[in-house]
Amino acid sequence: MPFIKPTYNIDGDVTDIIIEALISDGVKGLIFDLDSTLIESKSARLTEEVKAWLSKARPHFKMVILSNNKNSIYLEKVKTILDMPVIGYAKKPSRRGFRQAMEMLELTPQEVAVIGDRPLTDILGGHRSGAKTVLVKILRSIREPSWKTSIRNLERRLIGK
Image 1: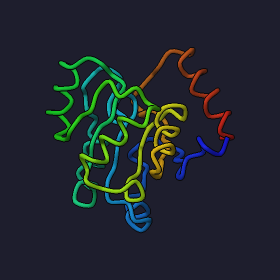
Image 2: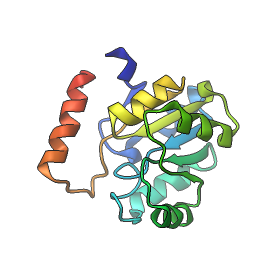
Image 3: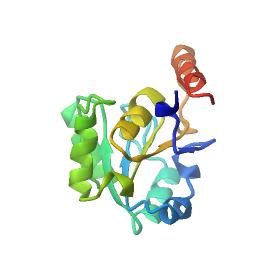
Image 4: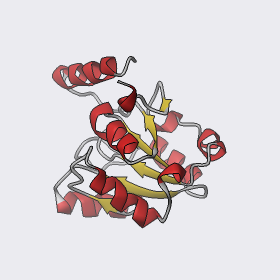
């Protein structure tokens, strides 16, 4: 399944992404998944580690969040907390949301990296849109139910990781 093989497969969460590696690869914009990638699912709580990583990354990249979440009140709260544009109800892996995010960033797909924790939504959608992709694990602070972990592990087996 090379179409869902990420450009970068990070053995950790978003804070383990090496910013300089993305810069040297020509990345100028980041499209982030939201829940479990930047914040705990549906919590709108930002950890100090993610906050520090975002502060370090902001001078180098334009940023936008692309989420399948449909809760507009929650997404508005997240927009304020993270201080970046949020596109909700994206229906990932549909290309529509990814195109909208790239237009918002005013960048070409070759200049964008999609960062997310799900191969079948974030990585597949990013590849279908022509962007580079970064697969991360869920945030270290998250303790999810075993059924959800099983689904994640199955998705990762599909891509050979």
